[in-house]
Length: 422
Image (cartoon, rainbow, N blue to C red; front, side, top):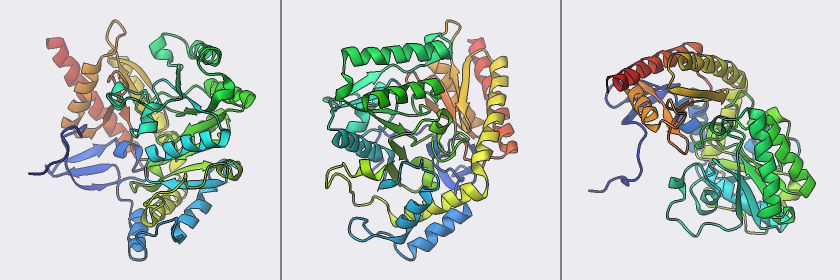
């Protein structure tokens, strides 16, 4: 009997029958509150009626028109609409299928445009599982194990993870920037560096917002040495953090921006944006792909952007995110196993640590799994497995946030009581 690969593991045992908004109906008949949103993908909630109708209409017209053979109207309309949200300097877009594929395209473009070999990424970053993307991913060795040789020309720089380092945020930023300068003196000279690549909020690496001063420090060094800045907004973009793009809170201007996940409410499409001048420095044939910019996915992305604007979902993410973080901090006060609460907008996380300050992956796993019994779906993350990320759709309401906090609190009570008995 054929089966799904045994190394593809589910974070929960749920098999979905139907989904709507922030709710999943399982084949077990249980209605689960979904605070995973497909890892931040179903930005307008499961099966938003306007997105469903846009996709249904497009399916009846054109399903696939290969974009390098014949152009289709949804891709042209999506490109125009993205112009309302992209930084003004980014006026050219290339479409792919997945975040990892867009990352590969961005790395290729950066090297071709600068004629420099090296890429500087940051510890804890996650950029994908394809060859180049996994080479710059350090959110866990599981993404890189037994795949050597990895892509060459990669330099990993320290990240200002203040909680783990036992520093204030300012101290961590000064440390990481000082080490970055030391890398320029010891590992790669600036004139051999093509680009920095960074997530404005680390995803799989632990839902760590990048300090504003660190982002500014990266940009300052980039401009000084003519190094490009690639901002990976695959998970943090499209309103997730309470800003349309997470990097804007730092006031920086990326040379290349990558987006995917929440842009099409569950349909596979990704994009890299750059200036026309920069994009034109890529070599002929270096951009393409059979399914990139699929017509149905593009139609869904157009309507996703319309819904986000019409329903004020970026503002809702900011407001509900503040409510969610406040609730998590109340739980932190009650349960000492929660060492840290952090996040921006609807990209929140709790980190579990023991009395000695060491990572407590066992408790994190018990809470994440235990929440399923409370009909709440959450996701783990972090290199040490001790972080739970909380990622509802941008449509989440105040009642759903409070219900999630209540269910998480009951889960924590059960897990910590069981641990005390042992």
